[in-house]
Amino acid sequence: MINWTEIEAADCAVPAGRSMEEMVRLLSAALADPDPRIRDGAPHSVLAAWIARGVIPAPRRLALGDEMAARFTDPAVQARTFAPLVLDMLVAGGDFRPAWVDAFERWYPAETDLRGHDEELGWLHAVAHGADLLNRFGCRPEVDPVRMLDLAAARLTAPTAHVFGQLEDDRLARALARVLTRHDMSERDATSWLEPVAARFGSDRVPSPVPAHLTNCLRTLRMLYVFADRGVRPDPASAPVALHHRAAVKAALARTLDAVIRR
Image 1: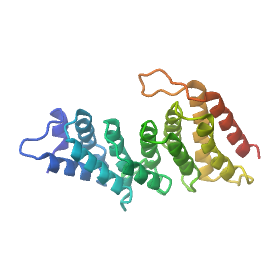
Image 2: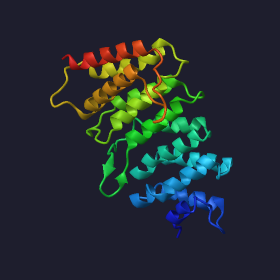
Image 3: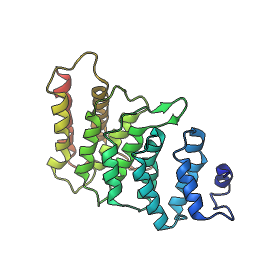
Image 4: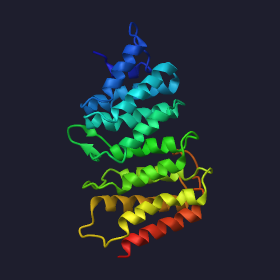
């Protein structure tokens, strides 16, 4: 039995007599554990520290990323929803494979369990964790930013009966804003992803009661409008960065929102 809390307290040192392969395998399993005290506790901190410090060799980090990409199809919801957390750590540290983007793109709009928190499983946060990874991928030069904007639109228009309750809309709006700070997009690129949103929600009279996915979408776009107006911080200590094509994005957001709520 590994005492991850002791490892964390010992500055995340690799225990004597343990191989790195064994430790990474155990950490990977811990990040899919149904017990939230294990999954979201010290193993998460240890893995983050080892990735950030380069303790895990590059080939093993890439293999770990492949494991997380495969985990998007795992039958256990906590395994699926914590996979983007680990991929986010890896990509932040400089590791990247196009296949990871492909796997994420297949999973994110298709995930049906959108609970932020469960009494037994703890934090799940599919939308929020996915938003953070979308942010990370969307700021990589290897990834087409329009692809990530379209992916966010697909997530926002996917039917669900679950209303976001744990700031998932804010996290997704921030991810969109970060992608929209890229300067390698045309004005058309920065706004065309909103067209399927307007087409999906603006063609018919809004039913009563308002469906959950429409509520989620409206909340996300409203928050994105604030980011478009004020800028978005890359991290808490940074000054806000203006969105590229800021005026056009604001105008497109206003048109999209108006197309839905004017009915």
